[in-house]
Amino acid sequence: MKTVHGIHTAGGAPDEDSGSTGIDLSIIVVSFNTRETTRTCLKKIQECDPALSWEVIVVDNASDDGSARMVEQEFPRVRLIHLPVNRGFAGGNNAGIREASGRYVLLLNSDAFIGPGVLESTIAFMDGHPEAGVLGCRLTNPDGSMQASARMLPSPLNKLLVMTGLAARYPSSRFFGRVDFSWWDHAHPLEVGWVVGAYFLIRREVFDDTGLLDERYFLYFEEIDFCRAAQKAGWSVVFYPHAQVVHLGGQSAAQTRGRISTQGRQMVTQRVRSELRYYRKWHGLSWVILSALTEILWRLLVFARNVPSRSESAGSKRREALSGACIMASILVRDRFGKGERV
Image 1 (cartoon, helix red, strand yellow):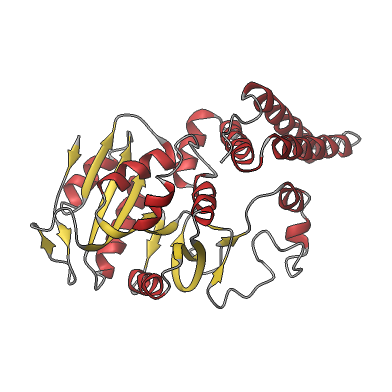
Image 2: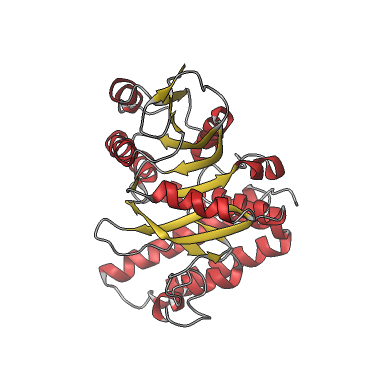
């Protein structure tokens, strides 16, 4: 079922006659059992009342917590799309993108809260930089501390730096801190490998070159894959630091985690499956094997290092390491080494 309401123009008034073309921005919010954060997200958008023509589309990924009903009752000007099953981040956003009519499309997480000026400043930057196809902005925790918002594309080396803790131990190093640009002051716009999908602004023309998000990624790596596709098509991916968005992080994933496994096994499985698919798609079988072996060997090393100790902490590390290694090995074989199609 789909509910369609008006489009907002500058000043917040709905324009009932402007149903399909000629607006600046389509904001798409995908919700899965995140009723309260989705409510806050939509309220923040309303409070901003940007000086743009804009529409908001909420895609409900088969929530059972009353999220869709809340949107219908409290936000009548929002366009609501009900999906009968949870189609994940990519599938949910694609459903919204197909209905969007803005010259820019913003994929906004339901737990990402924008403030005044964010929409105007990011679109103004994109208007002034026609080579920019995808833009992300500064993401912060509720206490104001900065989250990793600009990142290099994945590689087995970058993965090793994170797993071993070297990236966290030496954040000021250009080499060890390369994954999240932690050595950099984030003071000016920068072309990067990928930006986090919490605030993911896309120029409409990019879809003409890349298609929509790859729905074979149910969770994780979908925005990385899209940024890679945009770059392959000649577009820049830009981190823009002069706009700030508060991001709680992991709300929909937390709902899934609680239902499937208290140990988060399903989330690890999703991450591994998406990672191997990404490597197979963009780099071929050799990177799949290299990445998998890197993680398996590291986890086995962690397991071995904690064997002599009988402490509760060491036991937890052994279980986690062995579980992670087994998940990686199992998916590597079961998914036929990623099954990704080369680009």
